[in-house]
Image 1 (cartoon, rainbow, N blue to C red):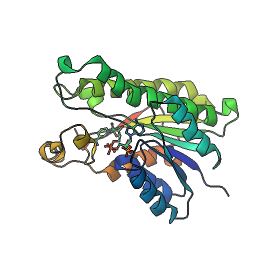
Image 2 (cartoon, rainbow, N blue to C red):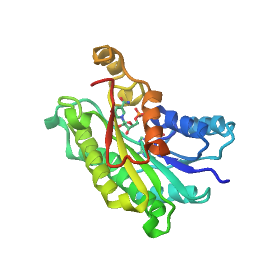
Image 3 (tube, rainbow, N blue to C red):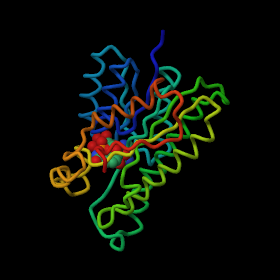
Image 4 (tube, protein in one colour):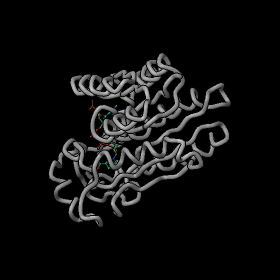
Length: 248
Ligand code: NAP
């Protein structure tokens, strides 16, 4: 019997890589997108391939429509698409909103919103029973920032994640009768490199202990929620956003 095929964008480190590992353990063939870190992608693919599943890595900037189409074409070669994790996301240096220029708003929205939308569109076209697909499930990575607004940090990022929440709800209702479930998770403060890439490597040790549970979360803790939402254990759940934030 063929294995289910999953696409994970930004799937080669952080929350995406943790999700890829759990999906491999649960017998999924994987297509992992990433932006630029070839060596890390190759290393993870080799490691996951040893678990007896097929793994393809694709250098894919989700902000580029042609790249997204290529990502899904690679998945098509493995079999019918069963799952999409829209995980690729970016934030930039902490600034007040008045200091954020419009070029930055466009950069952040290009990846976090337009990239996620392009991937949702490509996935639904393949999964929807209305267009001959076998059904499937999508999980979008939002953020607690969507509701907190991230003042003096990154209102642009927070607004992009609010758009992800709304897109999740709207798309879920559009495709609910066509075999496709669409949900999102909102992580809180999670220990990954995203904070350093936004110019604040000390953010997790600084804010982690102040969280309601007294610590930051791990990538695996978010991945467990993502994989559960993709699984048949969540078969009657669609259009929801699950906070994975230790109470934040
Ligand atoms: P991360 O450690 O910075 O990893 C980001 C991943 O996305 C990398 O694999 C990166 O590829 C890829 N990526 C970045 N820009 C891309 C683009 N334009 N096209 C394709 N791939 C791209 O991030 P993370 O912390 O795991 O975050 C994953 C998701 O969770 C994001 O959507 C983020 O907004 C969300 N989130 C994270 C936290 C947190 O505290 N960590 C909290 C809330 C929400 P390369 O490796 O090639 O650079």
